[in-house]
Image (cartoon, rainbow over all chains, first blue to last red; front, side, top):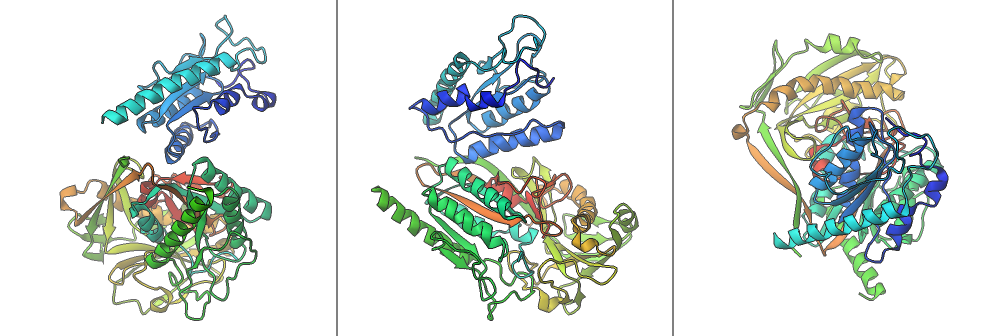
Amino acid sequence: MGVGPSAKETSLHHFRDPLLDLFSSDEDIDLLGIILFGSSDKYSEKILTSTRAAIWAQGMRADGAVIFCEGSGNNHVDFANACEQLGRRGIAVAGLTVIGKNGQFVVTNDYMNDNIIDVCKSKGSVEPCIIGENNLSNDDCKKALAILKIKMNKAKEARNLS
Amino acid sequence: MGIGPSTKETSMHHFRDPLLDVVSADEDIDLLGIILVGSPDGNADKLLVGTRAAIWAQGMRADGAIISADGWGNSHVDYANTCEQLGKRGIPAAGLAFHGKNGKFVVTNAYLDAIVDICKNKDGIESNVLGENNMNVKDCRKALAMLKLKMRKSDAERGN
Amino acid sequence: MADIDLGRLVIRAFDIKSVSWGDEMKVTPQGEMIISKSMLPDLVSSMDTIEAVDIRLIQPDEHDQWTNTILDIIPISTKALGVVGEGITHTLTGVCAMITAVDTEGKQCHEFGSSEGNLKEKIIFDNPGTPHSTDVIISFDVTLKAGMGQERKGPYQAHLLCDRFLQVYREQMKNFDGKLCSARNEFHNISRPGKKRVVIIREVAGQGAMYDMQLFPHEPSGVEGGRSIIDMGNMPILVTPNEYRDGILHSMQ
């Protein structure tokens, strides 16, 4: 559970964040901002904070959201709920997190199917404890953006039909 | 500083809030939501949280904002800053605040040109009577009308 | 572009016709409410800042009486279905709760100006934030331990005590037959694409003692389960129109 060395995002990682670089430079996208929310210790707070994030995205009238979860295990409880709360509000979702062999989802739902990208790079089944090994790469981010664009188009078509 | 009985907004007030009623019912408006922001004690915190609210509003791509102050005196420091931070980001803002005679702005700036004074007391004072100086439907309609005017002006300036 | 409905909230109001003293705590959808003080001793002993509590039932023709400074006027609502901001809420009309507080030294619990005095002169009735002149007011008159009216914990516990008392009625209200309601209101969070995008910003109390705001309680206009905006660093929080009008915030001012 939690964040191991290989998935840890350093301050330097945030300073050079590949996800932000990609999404802010894509001319088809109006990037509204980055919502930060903490992954709490307590279950009830996990649900509260991840639901508030989705409610705020809806208030922003976001067409889509890319959601990244640092770490795995209990952090995926918040992650899964955020995906569900966004999805239920009709907001297209693409997700990025560490899954690998030891980070299989502890919970899942209808809004986490073909839209979640595993950023795990290590081959073994254990946390390798090497700084940076399982961090987000440019390719991961490009995949997420592509998935999100497809999802947003589908959502738009569905809205136009209804 | 702070809040007295006549400007206090009870839980009942929030349950029946006239500002929300007026804005949400207007068909020319897409109400994105209500941002609640605390009015802290320290000056640095006041500037921080008000600025964060304006940044959120910008992230929401808001065309306009209506801002209500809680109480007066030092609360107006946050209020004036939030109006300024919105204005600097090109978001027209109208507001509701208690002024009367007691509650003149302790600070001021160029973005406080559309504020409705919600004072009802005849002598313009904090009367210690619960509910007396609360906003009513008329105040809220006035603030919304002022906001619409400011949004129209800002459109004209942008050439829309 | 067509409007988009982002969510629905139904508020069913049950009009209370009589509020009286009795041996049990009971409320019926037909409009009868019975108040008992039996649980007060246990509530008081569970709060370390509270010395005593008295409840008064103030009928509409009894406004000519003394009151300590008023902390809050509270609608009595509960979720019958869903969470605050969506689903179905049951609320009572014709009655509301009021909290007043003073400490054992006689110091009123207030920050800037206090409203103790003759009730009829100290409330402008029929405003959004005040009782209707025809409402029965259930007044919780809290006596705090010395000096506790100026500490955060004192007024917080006064609100919490009232909330726990009201919860007994809320549990009964959850099971009210919806068909018996006296009024039904339906609210929608509407997105109007292409229209002017407006946000309401509400600066709320965040400086401590009774100058606080409780957010995200379990029950509409409740306390339990919520958290203080001070503890969240007074940072901006977005709530939806339906969350707001359902009572996702509780004034601790």
